[in-house]
Amino acid sequence: MKMMKNKADVLLGLQWGDEGKGKIVDVLTPDYNVVARFQGGPNAGHTLEFDNKKYILHTIPSGIFHEGSVNLIGNGVVIDPMIFNEELRSIQMPFDVMKKRLLISRKAHLIIPSHKLLDAALEHAKGESKIGSTLKGIGPAYTDKIARDGLRIGNLLQSDFREQYEILKESHLHKARALGFDIQTVKLDYLDFEEYEKKWFEGAEKLKEFPAVDSEIFVNKALNDGLKLLAEGAQGSLLDIDFGSYPFVTSSNTIAAGACTGLGLAPSTIGVVFGIFKAYCTRVGSGPFPTELFDEKGQLLRKEGNEFGSTTGRPRRCGWLDLPALRYSVMINGVTTLIMTKADVLNGFDEFKACIAYGYKGGEIDYIPFEFDSEEIKPVYKTFKGWETNLGKFRDYDELPAELLDYISYIEDYTGVNVSIVSTGPDRSQTLIK
Ligand code: GDP
Ligand code: IMO
Ligand code: MG
Image 1 (cartoon, protein in one colour):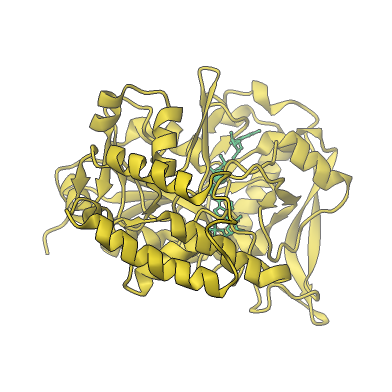
Image 2: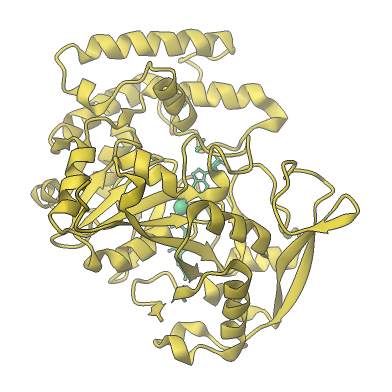
């Protein structure tokens, strides 16, 4: 077979999401021609900061602010046109510029308002064991995709779309009613169902103005033509449907393999795999989190790291870095280079910890057991010395304090992969490349 001229690089989160993917993709975009999202949907919240402005992207790839970049929403993504339209408004870019920079796969699936209704109904039915979903309709939309009932962007362009929509909606309402839910009683992002639906169709009209493409053909041609492509992940590996802390996961493959199915890339075309992690750990929603801190140290991480969800505003649960889990993510993704973010959040700590193994059933293990939610998992910690200086002022990787470089080198030895970028603040400029 003819070899592609270029390989596609992938950047993805190694923890439970919110590792700073948006910020780093924005920093790396000048090195790429195409930035492509491959999975997830508006459950994602990717924050970018530059020129004293802050933007939160949910569906649009994080390369959008760079002139000359092409941003592709791949077939693996699920799109809510209502949220997409709000996002278009929030990024305050002339529409004709945006239309030149953004392409959408015809095969990407739609989230319709009744998917959100079902999401709320299903979470409610779970009671105490709820997932803590962002309630953006992600689970029900992917369920329909797998059940072969879903509607795609390509359907939106067909003349009988409204009929197809009504059939799917009716089946959702039927399921929701069986769960005791009614469209009259539920609010979708603070809107009544009818209001949401109206805005959804307005958004759908807007969405139709963007070029719809066969993303698999587009990406392969781009690589063949010698263009550089960066695939941007959403969520994190520990939220992966197969390898995350199931059932407390999202409904897509967040791992590197997801870039293949979510864009139409063959495994042999994958090049660099950037794995991004915070210098500590956070999680939003329910599910196991062995290193979670419930004391003032956890509160300090939340305060210093401004750990509140970009999509839902919920406080994020905070704790120390979990190295067995990080190494697992490195393995499952074939990470070739690591990126550490939010190192600056540890500024205020004289000393801090990282989990290097789990005490489990009377012994010690250094991998994630099947029963990851077991009460019996007790983190074994190693203590690291803090740096007592503000990292925000450093502009050169090699000048970073010895204590931080020691921490990084421990992580490199533990995972077997080198750290190539350290992020020391939310702004584009606060990024140190080795
Ligand atoms: P994503 O979902 O992986 O793109 O991450 P989010 O945007 O949800 O969450 C990361 C948060 O941390 C955002 O508010 C970023 O602006 C911020 N951030 C990113 N990198 C850094 C960093 O190195 N230091 C600090 N203090 N904040 C950062
Ligand atoms: P980014 O891309 C953090 C979490 C939710 C919930 C679980 C399932 O910003 O890193 P879902 O809405 O997918 O049904 O929720 O997954 N979750 C995220 N947590 N960052 C995200 O995305 C997330 N997307 C989903 O909180 O626990
Ligand atoms: Mg986020």
